[in-house]
Length: 212
Length: 212
DNA sequence: GTCTATACACAGATAGAC
DNA sequence: GTCTATCTGTGTATAGAC
Image (tube, rainbow over all chains, first blue to last red; front, side):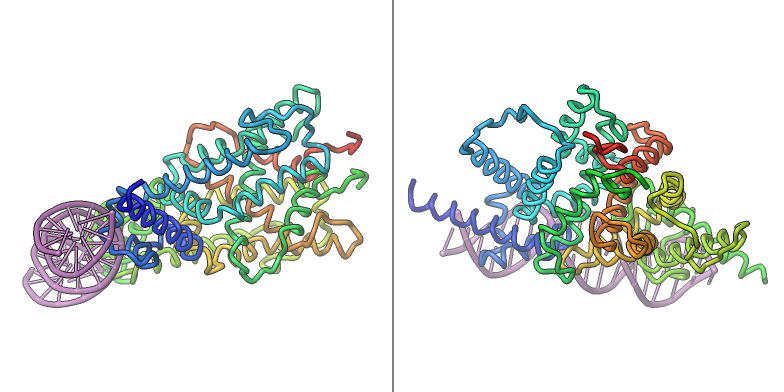
C-alpha cells in the first residue's frame, strides 16, 4: 500500500472514529458533517472524498460492526459460527435467559454510537414508514427463533413469538438508549439492569411461585 | 366572544387539528410548519399569530391532552379524581395489571400524534441530555408507585421499582410507536397486544406454574 | 487526497399590506 | 387576524487550487 493510500485510510479511520464519538455524545441527528470533520481535525470537503453522505457513513459503521461481530464469533471456542442455531436451548432457563440478555446488552453498550445512530435514523424516518417495526422484528430474530422452538416443544408462551420477541427487544433498546449514557446520572450497573430484566422476563411481576 | 375572536379560535383549532394529523402520519421531525398551515388551509404567516414555534405548538397539544384526561377522570363514576392513588391495588392481580396496561395502551393510541411528537422531540435532543431517561421515569410514575406499594407489602420484586417501571414503560412506548400505525401492516389487534403483555409481565416466559 | 471558499436548498421566522 | 412576500440562519454539498 502506497503512502498516499495509507494517508487516505488514516483519514477515513479518523473520520469514522470521530463520528462514533460524536454520535455517542450528541446523537446522530444533532451531529453535523462539520462536527465530524472538525473532531477528526480534517477539512469539511474531505468528508466527501470518503463518504457520500452522513447516511452512507452510518452504513459503513454498521458494516464495520457486523464485520467485527463476525470475526469474534468465528474465533469463539465453541465456534458455532454464523449459523445462529445453538442446539440445546431454553429461554426459560434462568442462566441461559440471563446470558442472552447480557450479550444483547453488552452489544448495545459496546456499539452505543451505532445503536444510537440507527435508532435516531429510523425515528427520523417517521412512523407510517413502518421502519421502526421492521427493524424491531429484524433485530429480535434470535429471540423469536428461540421462542418458536419453545412453542414447538409444547411450552405455553405469553403470545405470538414475533410479538413477544419485539416486546423484549423494545424494552431492551429503549432502556439502553435512555440509560446507557456514559456515566449518565442514574448510576445503575450493567449487572443490576441485566439481573432485573432476567427476573422480570423469567417470572414476571407475580414472582416464581405464582401463588399470589 | 366577538366574531374576530371566534375566527381566530377557529384557525387555531384548525392548525392544531392539522398538526395532529401530520404528526401522526409523517412524524414530528418531518413535519414542517408549512405542512401544517397548508393542511389547515391557512397561510404560512398565520401560524406565528398563534404559536411561537413548532415546539410551542407541541406544548399546547400536550396541555390539551392533559386537560382532556383531567376532565375524563373528574367525570368518572368512582371519581378518585386527580389524586392518583386508587386504594386496593395489586399489580400482581391479572385483571388489574391488564386494566393498567389497557389504559396506558389506549392513551397512547388515542393520542398517537402527541406521543409520537414527544418521542421524536426527546430523541432529537440526543442522548447525553438524559432527556429520554427523565421522561421515561416521569411517564412511569404510576407504575413505580404501585410497585413500591407491593414491595412495602412484602412482595418480592424483580428489582428496583423505578427500574422495573421504566422497563415496562419502555416496552410499551417502543411497541406503541412501532406498531400503532394507522392500519400499518402488522395487523395486530389491541386485545392481542394487551393480552400478550399482561401474560408476559405477570408470569414471564416461564409461565404461571414456575414448574419448568 | 486535502484544503479553502462558496454555491445551494430549505425550514424557520418576520414585515407590512389588507 | 390573515395574507403575500421576503429575509435569515444553518447544514449539505461542490469547485477548484494546491
